[in-house]
Image (tube, rainbow, N blue to C red; front, side, top):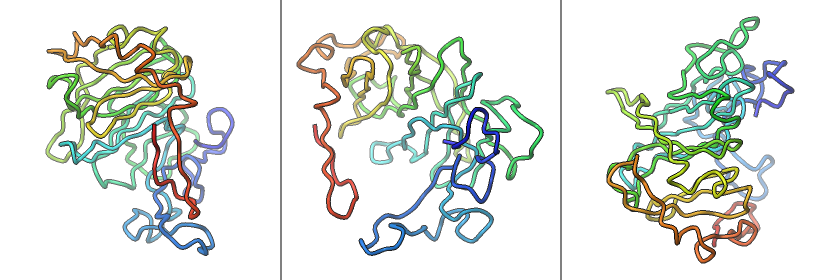
Length: 272
């Protein structure tokens, strides 16, 4: 996050000399003896100067979960991010593949709205979110995934699924790309009841997909991982198969993931 107290008073997310409030891109495939444990890729947007070379993008408050649209399953390779707001708006940001060096606006903007004008941004233009919602719908976005599986039906493919941690609600949006690869969001649909309701979903903290592109979510409140299955004809009539909510398909979070760490400190695998 921005590393500051409320509303980023030190304007760190817009400070070119700070790593706080930024998304970083580094290569950790270096020897154990390397003094800092990573190198900066030569094609990073600021590798030649203008900001800390590790920086990929600016102006983030608290990007709570991001994912890449899976190219191997027909996706665009775009980066899609859920960024938690301060007190008014939650936002979804879309970045076409490889298009680093952008400024997503915090703290000058919260969502698509002016926040402070007393200090200028590091650079403009500021990239607007493709979707936002206010605190009537929730209080902390959980970024999700662009669905590229098959179980939920063809009409669901290519939709971005996301949630709110506080309200335990789930939505999806359609993403339409222009010739430049920039996205426009439309057709917001809620899936909370179809996915089991707020008591089943209870504080969604993360999303994931398996090797087939099928959708999983983490219920932090219940301590389980849920697999979302079904075969709807349209996203609006999606129905979760009830068996995927019973004990045989619920994976207790504390027991469901085992991360194996190798001596070189890089995570190699995670197994159920």
